[in-house]
Image (cartoon, rainbow, N blue to C red; front, side, top):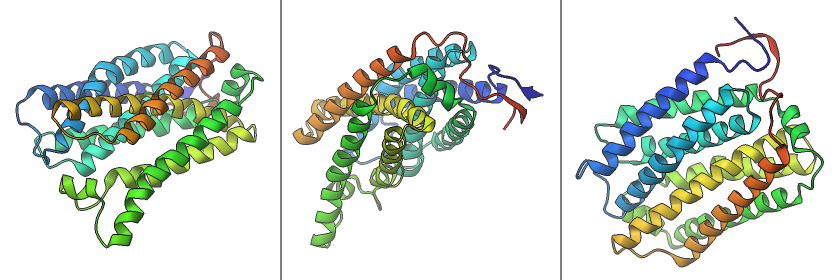
Length: 287
């Protein structure tokens, strides 16, 4: 069956619905089943904070944005992609980093489902329509924020990594968690930082995909920043030290990304009457 303009692929709907169900299962079990996680004590508050933010914010946001995206909302589609990207990042870290538990296959399934939905959704996004909807407003605030984000994340993580390499040890956060390697460093420095840098470059050049990546990344960064704040809350409750510098940096990133996202969405207008999907008369509705 050909995918006409505005037709939201059923495969992506199914993947997102399955993601919603499995995410609720994973977060409820993690939060309410006593002693479920087998990770080092230093990691537990971070897992609880991530689960709480995911259950209370990401799950409702994914459900609402999916419904809007199916109805043809450009804003809804962008939000759906961003929250899916957040869940992809989250369950990649769970699948690769958390100690083996009874939900391991759920984490792997969520990794696959969110990767499928995110890639499938991005390749169908009509980036030109998105750029046209945003209009001719200044992109400098978005470019500046993304470059600042890249600099801050690179500085925070590389200061820990290079310090440990110079001392011939492993970073303290890795050692305290009893991990063999630093999964978050790898995800951030290997995927997130280059993606945000590329997004800033393309946006500065006025490319349509610069607008698309900026919108999706703003949703993802705002959601992830909220998760970091929730982690910090649980760490304080557990009596663990919270690096003030990191708290200020991630808190600031969360607030600024949310404000810029609101500005971006307001610039888009209502988005009615314009499908977020590419017109793909030759493409199949299933990936």
